[in-house]
View: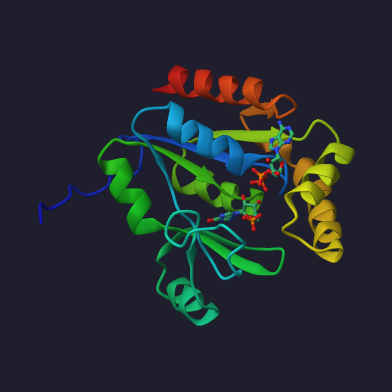
Length: 196
Ligand code: ADP
Ligand code: 5GP
């Protein structure tokens, strides 16, 4: 296999890294999958998680579904570029995958929570951070219910977490409101073109 050049010491001379965060149910997954179809060569970073797959989720495409023991072993070994506990489950981004994509100067999209975004900002200072807002808390609740993937207690937990995440939106460089889906996707496409 061809040997990869080492990642630049300060991780600056690399591809372009977009970090998207939003409260659960806002529409990040929907936006990311449309972006992957619309933007040529966009690489979506598939996270690992210890939560169970939802109906329709495909291992290796939506998430790498791993055990708690495996996730914790990789924490010990320092193999995550970032990781966090969200809604009681572990989520993380592989450092090896991310560094290799950036060394190849690819444009990479991360869908991660606010704790993970903070770690990525430290590790890759040139990353572009975007917070996607729901049009209102009522709309968020409706979307979470409409998705039919979470029970009432989980939806309550996600809404409580949403208020905390929204209070941190000013840590992001760009804010996009996902009211009309097409408008939000168009704004993201324009942003990606602006930075590439
Ligand atoms: P997230 O990844 O942020 O948790 P999803 O992409 O799973 O959110 O979207 C949650 C639900 O909201 C889905 O049923 C999706 O079809 C719907 N949705 C996404 N964007 C919009 C929008 N702009 N207007 C109405 N419903 C939306
Ligand atoms: P869900 O379980 O709804 O797919 O995701 C729950 C939350 O975990 C979302 O806010 C999502 O952005 C976040 N998340 C998904 N993957 C990662 C990851 O690799 N790292 C971190 N920190 N958060 C993630």
